[in-house]
Length: 445
Image (cartoon, rainbow, N blue to C red; front, side):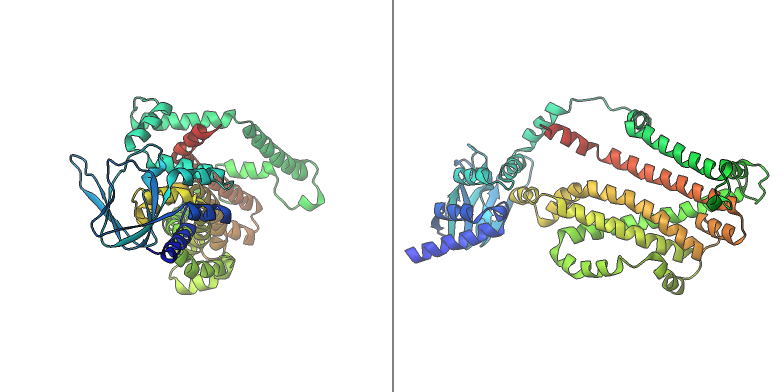
């Protein structure tokens, strides 16, 4: 191979490195150093580039041709093989110092390639300020064997006897309540409630301020709410009160389930796929700012009946909140984790399912908490416009019939039920993210 061809191969290798992780974030000087350290080479058809038992010391960039990688099969396993083509990198197992080849690399035809000593690669990464050390650590963890990873987890997670599921659920709920009571902010929130209702009582019942003379007082609302024979026909002792609550909760459950089942996949696709994002995100951003009330005429025209438009309007706001937060979660996953999975032979779909989806969960669960609150907001507006039952419908009809205590009862009920649903979503999210809290504790300095 002549000097010009060799220089061309090195330049090609430099372009490949610049386009892949973890070298994308490297400075121009670091890329230049790697290019100068690269050694060009070639392999004839069928020639072994390295074997399983040979010391692994080089990272390889395929310039032209195809290399076949074969992993030794376990005693009861399946022989694994894959092909690496031009502008691809292999030999990642050499990043572990002192390791032997984890696979057999053989040229499938005439191959032109460039190799770089991995000790030099690690030195370059370690000198880089933009996450080089974290990239090395992620690669080493990803390249460790399953047995090594299980042993590391066992050091931090002692074996515990599993209790029956109901007992674990009750224990988890009790622990959650105790933890809430132990938080200093809990008593600050209770003080906030005292100030709110105390201010209401003083403004209406005690001081009778001019701006509040037409508002029902807290005593009047409480008496109506708890009365077995309410003046306006609605209290905790009347069945119609629970009919309104059930109608709203049922609509929220349907809309929230639809928003979650559609919003999470769409958000993951927006965050993980550049092509999907280029086509869909502009439309997403065009529709998202439109107020829910602006959709009311179209919803009534398009959907038949009085129930479906309400569910659609509630779903719409919840969907956008879920999809947007999920997209942020997918884009927040560190790229070197995806690289580590791909280096271990994971397909793009496997990297998506086992890396991007778990990494997005904190954002997804936060989005669901926002989503259920937005759903209640949208539901009340939708029920005021179209509906025959529900808390929003109750508030609107009470206003037209000048039943002001019932308006406040409906508002407070909506707030309490909405708070309860948000707390349920938050509790489930915290239970699902126990692994995340453990991971943060283990990686804390």
